[in-house]
Length: 226
Image (cartoon, rainbow, N blue to C red):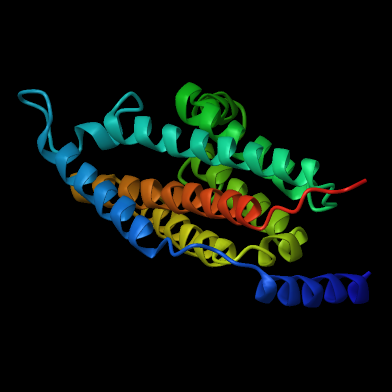
């Protein structure tokens, strides 16, 4: 199995070198700066009498809303990649199916607060141990599961130029978000802003990675003659 994985990884690297991708650096920079401007606006555009972290601590605030949108976009772009790979009869379709479902579930979690509700219920019956609460445990488990899944489909991710790099940046922001969340008790205005900003940049780069993956699949699309 190890040899098969190594072979698929080498094959993915070779395929990557043969593929083309339009220059998207300007687009990535624009969306990143726009997101930063959105965060700054969220700090100042608050109801009268509220603290600057209003949109960062409220689940119905501006930060959660954009986070859900980015995750929904990541799922939608992954669906597009599914359609292209199916049309081309490419066997690498399942990683895109997994990402479609994963990003879709996370988008729903942002909107419906699955892990917050489950963590609250779980905390009534089981102690969270060294962790502050079960919400923190679930968020960490999300990252562990995502890392294991990404490792298992690594060859398919490597095939797409820039996809792995963007996902790594997204994961780095996830680590920053989780670290701030787990080490700041009680939460302060500053820690809340930095924590939720890191989460927003995490999902931004996941969405950008999914878009680049879709663009790469479309750019290198070769319809099957069978």
